[in-house]
Length: 42
Image (cartoon, rainbow, N blue to C red; front, top):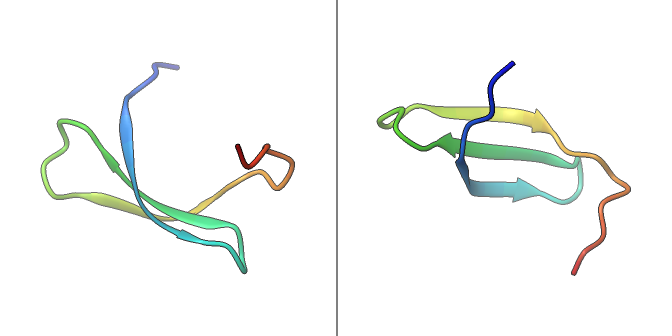
């Protein structure tokens, strides 16, 4: 597995889903990425 840097483009706080843009991937976004609910907010 390799790690990639990404930019958070959108976050749906009701369903805890994110849309992210992997840096260097052009204009391709990953939508509907599940986010853990136990992450601290600050």
